[in-house]
Image (cartoon, rainbow, N blue to C red; front, side, top):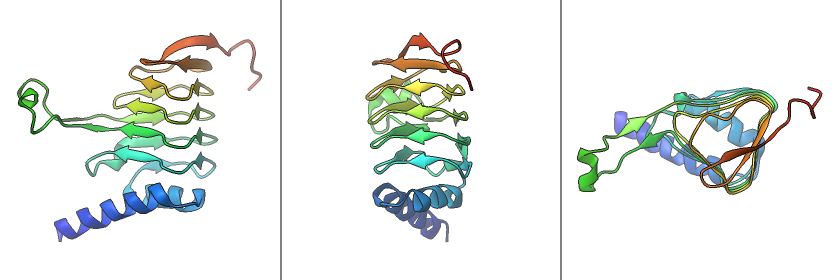
Length: 152
């Protein structure tokens, strides 16, 4: 029975990734156990590498996620010999309200994206992002503080 659930979850991930409907993507994430608010927009090709631990993902309200975004909750170097040095891990990802994640960005496990922050397209986020900031690059770094510019 456990294997059947595993295959159903994998199938749900594929459907979520390919679905043309934001509504379906959000519903599937909720079914998989993610903590998702209703008022969000997730573009196509959203990929979560979570090894069945989708519950480690939290996305708050008013979040926009561009196309081809990847979130890596789980990491496992197996079968590389490096797995002896770097054991598999699973870490939470929390995207706070009002955040915007640009196309083709990657969010690593253990990261919190602060409220009303923007992640530039193609960025790799390896550390927490402060609230009301813009981060870009590989690895992503803060390039702008939006505190004085934004009225939200």
